[in-house]
View 1 (cartoon, rainbow, N blue to C red):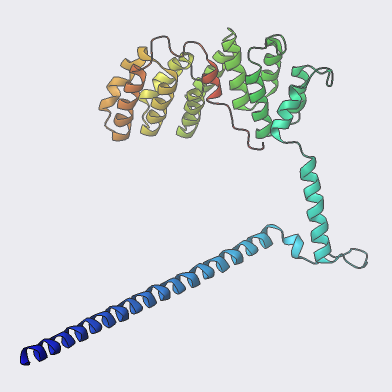
View 2 (view 1 turned 30 degrees about the vertical axis):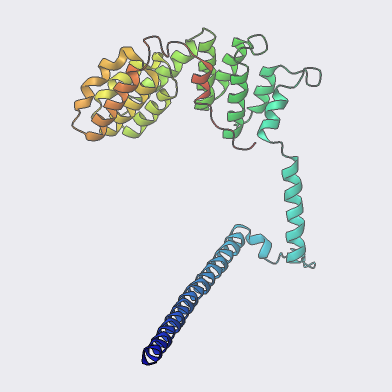
Length: 308
């Protein structure tokens, strides 16, 4: 009897302990869930506050960029002024209509290549019209792309036409692309002019001008530029030496490794480190690399068209 009673009491105690454990676990998870819910609510409030701040900043920027839209226009003769809302809406419609009437750059590119039946002008005449009156960077970029596309079309865009455009323009990218295309066709005269112009700038006392000249030489991608670059490898300014290494990397080939190897011991670590990289690059190029142009050489430095 007593043994049965003790077993019953022990069982009740075990159930109580189990119930207490379950209740404790439920309470713990309840607190944990409440904690994460509070954190989520705080996070949501922060996100909403950030969204409101961003919206406020955007509204402020729009107001600064378009101050006339929020200002009350005044009539010079005392007539009733146009309401701000109406004026803003009308201007918006006018700007949208104007934007729709402006052809995209690729549309202009297609128009340059239009069939002669719809536009009897030659390619040269179309390009000269595009590039008349101080052309923008975008117009020059369009012309570069068109000339690149027509590199093999000697009949449609003959050498004399490219030479005429070269002589009439000042944009360095456009002049370089014309010189590259002409060199690809077997005429290096304009390319030699490009190198000579940059070589003259390398004699400037201003490091900035020397850096700009090396930047232009680096875009040529031809061994024609190597002789102009080499003296700058010994420039007193380490930044110019770095620029010269980059330019040689992009114009030289295996035959020019010996020009760079001594620079792996340059006292400036930025120069010596880059020199090691350039040596490895040039060793991987054959002795005939960059002695003539491929389409990839020219395309690599085409200025981007920003307004498709």
